[in-house]
Length: 136
Image 1 (cartoon, one colour):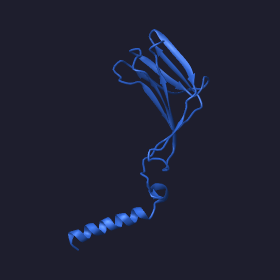
Image 2: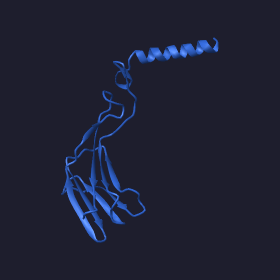
Image 3: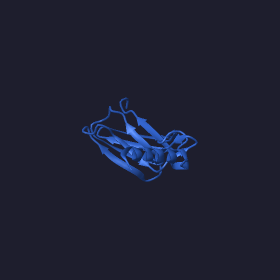
Image 4: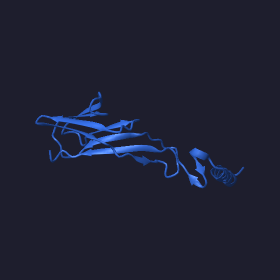
């Protein structure tokens, strides 16, 4: 088999493969889907204007145990917590620094996210809570 026949055969096999349909993981009704995954979750992030050193703690509500906590310093370019695999209806956020404290309960607004494009699985629910400490 010469080189051109081999290239032709590979191209033909590729066209046959993509035109037969792959259901959930490939081409379905003329639409190509990749296999990028995602997970539900929420991100709590602080604005760039924040105290030099602080602790950020997240709870699912006002009475629960802490889900996650992080210390942020002036050396950190960003301060955030990403909670994957959960979509709580509310999150209580507690921030403490040398001269102050902040605590508030938020109701996240989740949005659907499809990393492989519309009509392609998976569909994940994600939310971001942005907290600006500059006015506190």
